[in-house]
Image: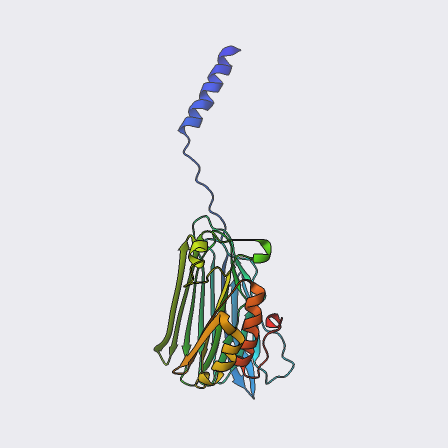
Length: 291
C-alpha cells in the first residue's frame, strides 16, 4: 500500500511543477458612449438623433413650455470612474437649437491601481444655436487618476456656456487627496479657428501642490467658467460680484473667462449659482444647480 501512495504523490508533484502560471484575470472596466443631436423646428428645440451604449445614458425631461431650451441629463450607470474606464460624449445643436446639459449626480473618480480614467466630450454648436454645458462637480478621491477633455466647434453666431468643477476630496468626510493625477484639457474653436485653449495638470503629491498660494492656497474645490458670446463683456460685473475675492474674471474678444476656488463644495456652489444665473440671461438653471 505504501508504493502506490508514494507514486501518486510524486505524480501530482511532477504535474504541479510542469504547469504554467495562471495569468491574473483582466479587471472589468466601464465603457460608455453617447451622442445627442438636436434641431429647431416650429419654434421649438427637437430631437434629431439619440445614441447611447454601455454605462452612458441620456435623459430628456419633458418641457413645460415647448419653446424653452431642451434639458439633457447625462447618467453614468457605472456609479463612478476608476482606472481604465472610458466615457465619450458628443452633442450637436443645429439650426437655432437651445440645449442645457447637466448630470444626474457628481461624478466620482475612485482610487486607481495605475490605469487612467478618461472622459472625452465634444460639442458642436451650429448657426444660431446655444449650448450650456453645466455638469455637476467631479470628485477626485485619493489616488484617483483622471484625464478629461472638452472640445467645442462653434459657428460664428453660436453661443457656448461651459463650467467644469473639481472637488479634491470631501471636507465633511475629512478626506484629503494626498496623491493621484488630474488632467483637464479645453480646446474651443469658432469657425475652425482656435479661440480658447486651457490645460491643467496635477500629478503626484497633489495635496502639497494645491497648498501653494499660486494654486488653491489650501482650498479643496475649484471651478472654471467660459462664455463664448458676442456680448460676453456685458456680463463681467455680475460674475465678479458673485465670485468676490475667491475668484477672478476677464472678458475680451467675445469671451468671458472666470476661475473660482473654495474651501468646500457648498461654498463653491453658492458662488457659482448666481454667476451662472447671470450668464444664462433669463434662462432657468437645471434643478440640480439650484441650492
